[in-house]
Image 1 (cartoon, one colour):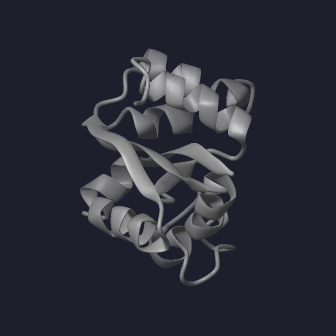
Image 2 (spheres, helix red, strand yellow):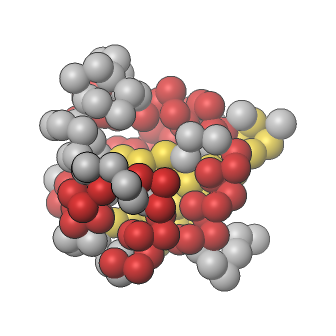
Length: 137
């Protein structure tokens, strides 16, 4: 089944020049970048994106990091895109991520783990709406 998912290269990944690496890995896998852009995330957008973490102790750090500098947001499409992208990105904690995954190869810690990817079709739909409210062709 063809799916769409959201991938964000976080400020730490953008600052380290890893946008091209992430795109290259996705495209080599056979996935398609439907739409993409660089943007500075407003605090309101970060709050909407991280709404499910609002009551957690690390919420403030998440918002602070994603709003600290530019990110690269993209909608990725392909068969089973959500599951495939999640596996390619690796475990959220880079210390637990397998070598060969983006986080395993480039992540420094849980906060500076280079990327975000949607964890379900429902999350993907909601998150795409947050970062691409105008829709995706």
